[in-house]
Length: 188
Length: 130
Image (cartoon, rainbow over all chains, first blue to last red; front, side, top):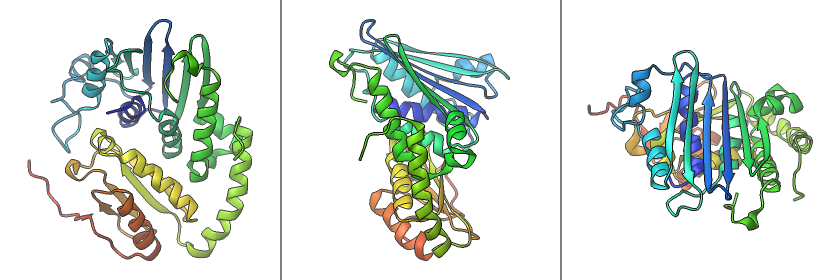
């Protein structure tokens, strides 16, 4: 994975497969603290302690279609390479929260990449799941959710391919408005 | 294009687009919606499934084809990612492998529009080596 946006796409698939009704994605960036934190929290079926401990093992997977599971190991690798790490909180029936921490200025931290595109695609292709995206930057925050879009545009709007591009533009605009690109933040 | 600020703008864009789309959908696709599933597991994402999904989303919309685009997990064809499953209304689903932009374009123009099979199909009886 070359971008944080792709990691988000990947980790969220785990939540979808865990049968989540609500998935909350938070990206928190701070140059003053030199940290980038990605959190993906779901209300899916959760994992028992043994599964949780093996989740970052590349040779462990819950699938039968193949024998490796690289999503979390690759996220952990990129986080550790930039001086951070991955923490997984989970309990059966209580959902799972994955927190990845990166050193913001570290040269091995992947760029943010196309986060807005990822979020727009996730919202449109998973209409039954309430996807919440929250972006935080130095005390400012902005968020959008499937529920909000449904409320504003109607239930069926979230499967409409027409909204993907404008939705991505809205996310780009809104996130750009809460961060100062001249301070050295990534292109969003 | 003017920059968008709010969901109200999004609502307006969608209503304008829907008026146009409704006419086209009723014209050339009365049987229902085309279902496109892009495999979006780690293997798919690493092989470029996200830009391919974006391509399908934008082009199907632009070319006025009534479709639902969703994601699936890994189907076990990691060697052939990005893979895309296409189901035309009333037909069996077909899985295409090694889908790049060129092949995605062919799938839309030939298979989705005319039902004509294109190269890259993963046969249903394919069994993976364990």
